[in-house]
Length: 149
Image 1: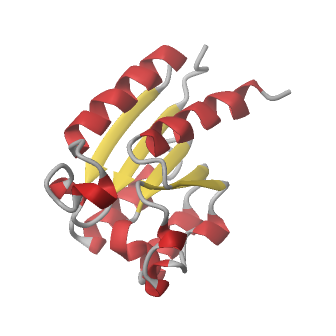
Image 2 (image 1 turned 30 degrees about the horizontal axis):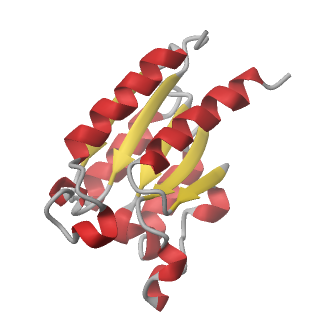
C-alpha cells in the first residue's frame, strides 16, 4: 500500500494561530494537532508526508517550487492568500503532481471576498468546510485515486 506516495501539506498565513483564532469559524484544534492526525492517516495508507506553514507568501512559493519532481501531491490551505495571490496560484500550477485545495471553513458561506479562490481552477479538487477533517478527507481522496484502475 502507498506505492511510495509523497504528500506535501502547505499551510498559509495565520493558520499557526488555529485553536485560539476564531474557534467558532475554524474549530478549536491546533495546527499541530491537525498535523498529527494527518500523519496517522498517511501512515495508515503507507504515504510519506511533509508539513509546513508560513505567514510568508515567498516562503510558500519557494517551498512549492522545490516540491516539483519531489512530491506526488500537494494539499494546500492557502488561507487568505487563496483569494488574493496570483503568485501562489501560479506556483501551484507549475507543480508536477496533483493539487488538492482544503479549507477548514466553508468559504462560500462567508464574506463575499472569500467566495473566489484563485487555486480551485488548477486543483484536482477541493475539500471545503469540514474543519480539520478536510485535510483527512484530502488524504483519503489521494488513497482512493491511487487505487483507481
